[in-house]
Image 1 (cartoon, rainbow, N blue to C red):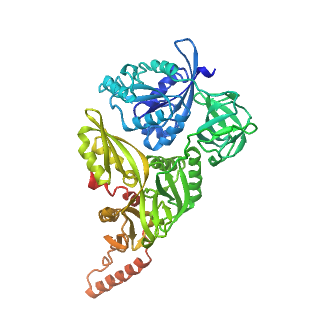
Image 2: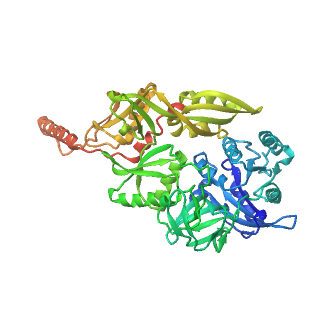
Image 3: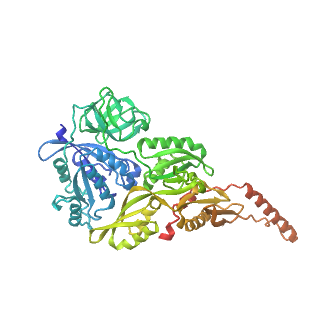
Length: 602
């Protein structure tokens, strides 16, 4: 039976047709009816369909009778394509023996294609190269196949040409999976070791762990334990995905399925843990899993303070299905009680924000994102700072280190100039460049993560008319000449608007931020000064003009002294109002921090 199992995943850049190919495979193997009207069956989240991008990893079992007459069990583990979800990709790869590499015949190889491919090769997977969308008028199948073959070091003849949308040559992909992907190697008689590559929370069954059985077998009602977490439980239900959850009596070596644990918190059942039997545990857990490390931090506050508990519950529920999300309570003078959340990147942050608003019907306020800094104090100790408000006083700081990333940018050669202009404005350094084809260039750049997370991707897309793509990985912390830029509204510092910026950019950023906030903060009955301060000095200021009530409207003629008296009384009233007045700051003001660099660079 083990010889007839094939575990594989599909890796591709966003929008290269990965989910469409998965649909065709499900239809051709009879897993779903051929006339199914829902597209992207594995993208079950409404957001995934809207944005055309896979966010959550999922799994499905197919049964396929090959040309050799034998019936095979194919387990497809679907993976996300966006750069932020590289961790989900690594989990899925660890559960497979093979990967179908899909490249768009119109777009060619892109940055994430390479990133995922290297991750698959590192996991020692058998790669099946596929060129998709050959039916489109702009397709260049032969040229793209040569690029892919060169990248993999194989014969271009081995690259399969398909159209997933039309179902053209998709049967060749199924045959290649059966022929080229090796069956799972594992010992059915050894103590149980099952890899948890994903999970979701079910209100009735508790945490449902998605597992790949590496050694041994799991039976219904077995007493199990987690090797890293230490939690013990009975398997409430075990089963496979067809594509819906279908209960079975056992999962054997090499199979992919799910185990309903009955556990109530994801902390008890961490993704990446190894499942084993309580009575006969394995000697050591499965290797190679890292805990997801947040790269971007932002604070989320409820607009209505009464929703604080609802926001906590919503974040806890999201965390059950998203191992990479972290959150901890935080209090702001301006915004009250909220949470400091850690995300994999900006796209991940957008998805979490949209899910909180849509699925949990919450009105929330999200501050501008920041990264984690290392602050070396004069006494030699090192402090990690995730928010500008936590930065120690200037006289105690010896140096501030910021995270740097290595960025790979794939772009057509004609956009080389605009891309390099953007990179230099963002403190990037060109380390190397390659030319995979005569009209494309790969730039290897090192730059601070803080410069990348805000709107770098949007700027890159607009400067290259959408043709460029990027991928990045953290390379470590480096010292930088950084200052804390504070924003004072009505002479009160607003900690949620503070940011850490390069000293050389502080004046420009301060000026732009103040002028943006001037347009966004609503006018009051008194003048509101908005100031930007760095290193204890005010570097920019603008005033939000006062609303003026026409107190002279009721004066029909009469002595001029009466008018002066009314204006004087209004002046005194405004002065008193200013002393006690509190300024409401809208959500747009916090997002203004994101767009500070946009207009200058566009």
